[in-house]
Image (tube, rainbow, N blue to C red; front, side):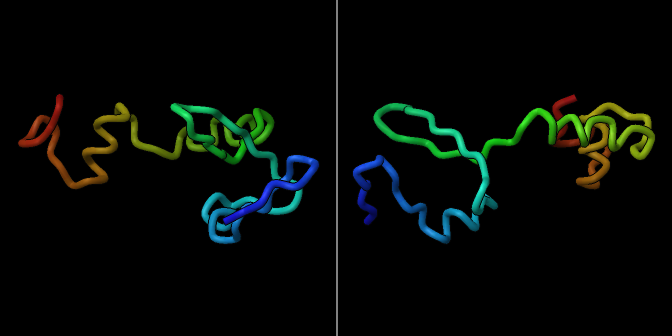
Length: 83
């Protein structure tokens, strides 16, 4: 059980912080959904931009679905395939 301070602050339990990978200085987002508050770690556009194109040329020349099927050991168009 957590208590909200007079400044509207609350301590996020350690197991939640660990699960989200957040710590001092981390940015988080709050969303209200069906009477519940959802807390998410915020990932800035700058961080995403840094990883843009990282896998270019490192993966086989296949579609995403084909790559996933290959990683799962499925044959293209085989049983259980959606293609």
